[in-house]
Length: 223
Image 1 (cartoon, rainbow, N blue to C red):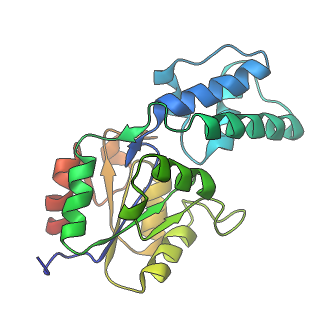
Image 2: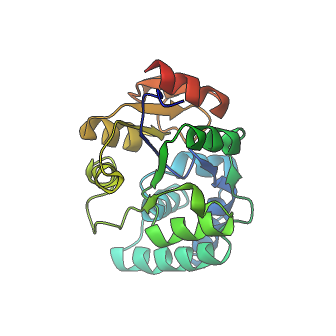
């Protein structure tokens, strides 16, 4: 199986490889409660995810009564992160077909990476607690390169390519942050329709769209 067209496949985390919605909602509602705001239903939190926890929190505050000062936002952000770190895999799991898909790619000699806008330490913690750390040659977070370099900028994907030592690469994501970063880095992006899509899946600008992880390997083979 040495003729697989990609040497490296990178994955976004939230809403792509892992269904983190329940745990993100718990953490967001914890922070909102500190500010005296009403909780947001889990399904509604889906529309707030993307760009990292601070952006999710800012959107959550806006829809529950309006924004707060930058200083207060940072306080609430830290409270959210502390709560999330303590409850990071209460319900978080691979999406259906994810385990088999990862094994299938590994069997084809593909190097697997995580490139997320989530803080690197939290991403590393999640995969460790799920027992999945050994699947990935690198985990890159939104803060890995410092402020202002997260997706949709190409910087994190370019770091993935650098750490991989070359080879043909593809990326898998669920939002315009992912498709934009991949396009800027010059690699194809497969979008998953079951994630936290910030536009209709076929409007994300992806090279291809899949509805289940069973479709990923054949889709990559067709690109």
